[in-house]
Length: 109
Image (spheres, rainbow, N blue to C red):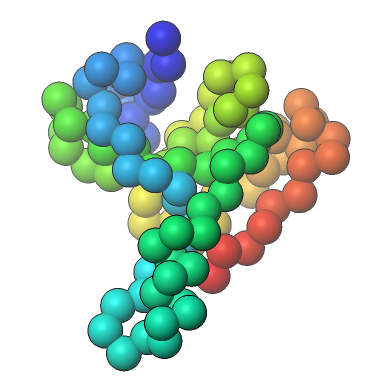
């Protein structure tokens, strides 16, 4: 069972209390974008075996969206942080680098 800590209310919630929202830190395209940009946004997703950044909503709690970093292979959760940030906090990236030496942050903007 996946357990994530909501960075807003501090509750450690099981995945049954949360709603998954897909990949975090995507540049979203709307009206006025090219067909290629919109197609890339809709269909081109990362599906890594390893560290992945995801959006989650504390649906049965405070209701707020947040981001989580976890390993898709081992289900290890590295940490969570508020959705208002455009990049993960540096201390979280350092934690991931310490545990996964080959990890490099990819800027999605």
